[in-house]
Length: 288
Image (cartoon, rainbow, N blue to C red; front, side, top):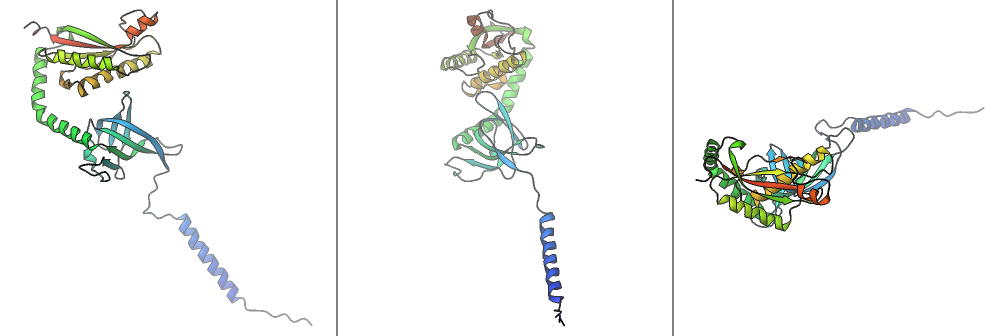
């Protein structure tokens, strides 16, 4: 006769319950994220941007590079803002109000990954030199101090000069460019400052800057290129040559319109790739 010993099943059942309970807790930990943790998505390294802060609206900055292209980046509480070694210290985090218009900066960026992402750039670090911050601060303070004076000067000019038909063009100088380029030569830079100095010596003189292209490329491309060339010249006149912004008429790009020469020859195209800087004086005061 076979005798079968029946061992108690209670310890085995208890063990199963323990394993089941542990698995349940683990599943809850893995499947139920902490409601206090907010996941923003995968961030990947974006491009490094070098340029000048040309505009700011709340937490968004517009950075304009040397070639005239602009990039908008966002800043947040995690953005590290630092200046070079000096008065503020190389590793000290600065406040966002130090990001002034006209300040040259280097921006390291990140952007949200994934197919659904808008691809907006966020600044992870913004760095600049102390000397540039001092200059931008001085310009801002001086601008604030001279605001009323400049406003009065602008209103006086507007009162004496109604529209473009009431201007006399005293002189025009042209800056020329290579195909598809916006770069200024050293010779052109010197000529721009000489033109600004000449205009400065003429009371109530204004500058009108107009960009042009040759017939190479599409109409849309040439329109954008002509505007970039005009902006490049204006930036140099104001930032280097010291021409006051309130004495500058609204610039424009004319693409391939109004050619100086035929676009049928390389020589003619070279003459048409230009920015015209016109010195204007009101007819009401010209000759006084």
